[in-house]
Length: 122
Image (cartoon, rainbow, N blue to C red; front, side):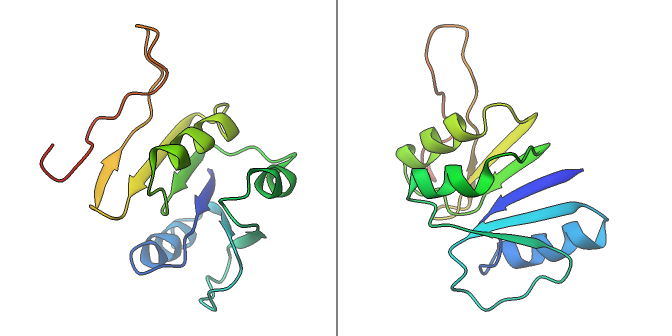
């Protein structure tokens, strides 16, 4: 399985990155390249996630089965990822500020984005 982690070297995501490699996943990390954490076996793509054009340039030509964003803090982050990676089979976008998972889902009602949980209280 080919996976892209946006982030992937932080406090929570490093363990997940290492586990993905141990499980034989083909792991790519998209980050600014400023964290010195090494994830042996992972391939790093360097771009600032907040710069849409830079991200488009580094991900051009790649396809992933799964995209996980460990650094989605705003609705704009989620919308940008949805647009960038809408062709992926699975998109998981954790909100690490509350350690709750928000999932972007296409909605038949015409609503473009639907958040399953918007805060720690629900």
